[in-house]
Image (cartoon, rainbow, N blue to C red):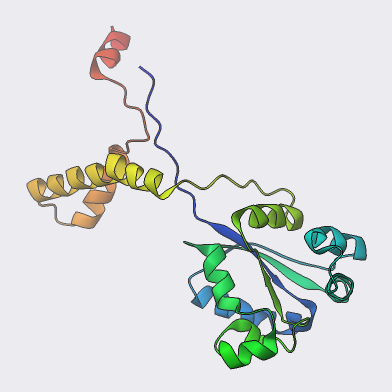
Length: 211
């Protein structure tokens, strides 16, 4: 009988860029990022060529801001970061704040653009605007990235109810029965032995091989 594989749970990812005007404060910004509950999965300092900037901001081609934006973004080094946490895209957008740093100081004084940016153009930070944009932008900055699709909340709830909760309940029940001296270590060992992702060899099969 084929073992049943549990569905995998994915944490949302987004791309963050520390722009040329704020690169000298990258260490402070990374501290702010980590304190906000993000994990930094990938990190790369680079300088984009004019062609790369044009490709990255291709969706803005033809807009009045396109020439100045691409010229600014290739004017110095940037720091590209892949960030991960629950609701990473929305939370990072909230954390960096409005595009215009001057207005951000009035309406969102605690946001990162208000803290590190100086104008609408030189606003210190970039963030992906959607799941599709995050996938495209992460692959652009980190071409070797493997980005898995995100599951629905229903799929996560189903995974927890089918695999995690029953296994934990069984393990805690066994702890109560055995009353080990170190329950945490005992439960950890029990969970390893009873991992629902690992197929078990039946005793009958083991006996047949012994014969």
